[in-house]
Length: 241
Image (cartoon, rainbow, N blue to C red; front, side, top):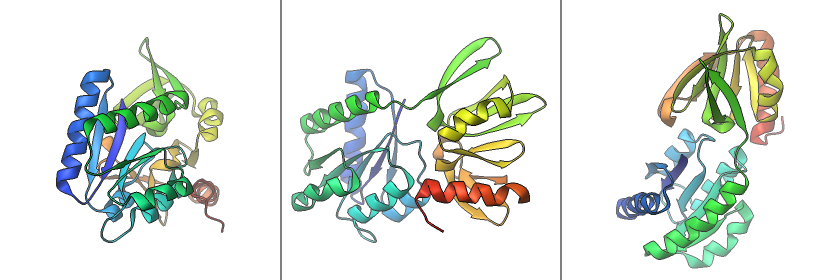
């Protein structure tokens, strides 16, 4: 499954891009799930590291697409970025924010598919590491960026992914080194959180992305763990305190 975000204040263009993704999925056999955002501020507020590719307009109200891209890159260095714009003169500056490509409006499907082919090749080369989860005898391999958080409950691990929950026997201590290397941090003695899912910290409450990337879920951060968790989060976001 490839997770995409379409950020464009023009509903007609957004609908067209979504239809192109559906056509590309049929022709390539690749599954896509796309979220659409007409407001760039809402996109940044709801942003999570589950996205593989973002199609981003440059000329939008409230916030310029280049500024959106800079703030997005502070949260996620790996997501593929494709500018969709009628402002060709600005597309050349895409290297500043690590843009993978750009498409000029009006968008033709052939051009869209050609650019997406290139993105897919790059995504396949930098595929996210996967966690091996033994769910009652069935072995599953889940990309780490698809996991929102992992908690232990009665000697069993519950992997809370964007698509649902997976349960298996295991130890949080055993999987912690691997997940920590992949941008997870402990918020309490029983839970490891994907830092890319964190939307905010309010006292001793974390606000993280909900299932399917929709809404929010709240998790408690313990007093002894808060300092180290916030430090890990700030480092992940590129903030220097």
